[in-house]
Length: 180
Image (cartoon, rainbow, N blue to C red; front, top):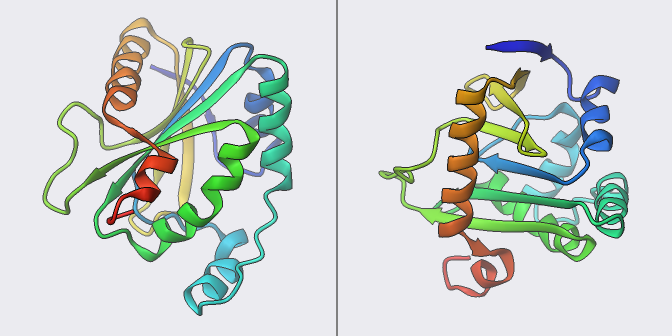
């Protein structure tokens, strides 16, 4: 059962999650488009074939700091082929994130399938103890994150994390494929 809810990705509570984990943080990312007001201009530039000029310094600094301290950050991105414009926008930025220490892997699938052993919701899993389920509206706008730290939810999300990691390709391998 959810005990805490965060309703803004700009809130100090949300940022604190990324400073407080001690071992690992894992993200399952499945939407093919996210709508973030802070990205709209960069996304429009990208769609127009221009440099999106995205400042990743905060995230890269965060990831490098965790990697230097022996903590691991990883994510699996489900990509429905062919990738949406937004997914391609993300893929352009992922190599810099990987270079900083963010272990990003990809599961490629077709429009009529979804990996059978994965949920259809995004989540962050911190230290194998806290699951934050992310809720978005139909346009991909963040609505809220809910903490689920009960044993059943944690067990399910650990199983889904392991399933995702077992079938995913490292980003570099995905980008080297003709579809990537």
